[in-house]
Image (cartoon, rainbow, N blue to C red; front, side, top):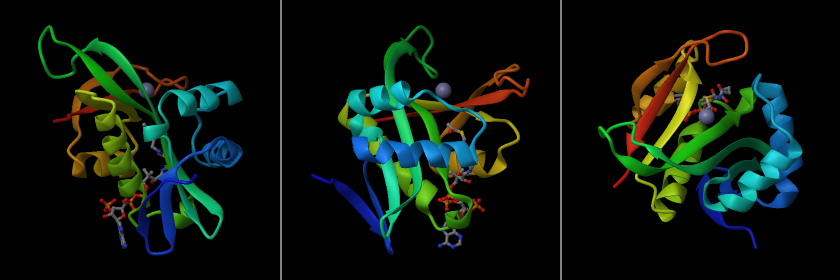
Length: 165
Ligand code: ACO
Ligand code: ZN
């Protein structure tokens, strides 16, 4: 059964299902240089369906966000060991950007990782990716670290994180 989380005009924001994964991979291939195996998508959906979310307009997939959970050192507290949500990847097709879809995907994934009792939520983003950094900052994420040569092409990443209540 489809779980519709919210509607933005004619765009449905809903939890992903296995039959959405091919379209999600297609959006990923068109929009980002970081790609993953089919198996990895399947695992993320199986492990954290609450925060694997798609945006769909009239049956066409236009965006996705997918996440995982981890235990590890806090990005905020000294010596703290916490449960963290981790945004693995988010993208919206170029033609559908600047309509609030990216914002809705992140907000709903925050709700998803809160359901799984995560203390914090974090992600890595290219330092040059101003659109994404601005989106995350508007939602309360803050830059906590700069990761040297994080990407294959040598670019640095910002590690951005938010504390969840
Ligand atoms: N009318 C006009 N502007 C609007 C409207 C509207 N109705 N709704 C939102 N906006 C504005 C927002 O205020 C925001 O403005 P700003 O950039 O000046 O702050 C801007 O549109 C973007 O916000 P959204 O629409 O919520 O986000 P969007 O759907 O455009 O998605 C995303 C953002 C996902 C970063 C997109 O640019 C993208 O897919 N980029 C390529 C892939 C990518 O870089 N992904 C992130 C990599 S990092 C990682 O995956 C962890
Ligand atoms: Zn990551």
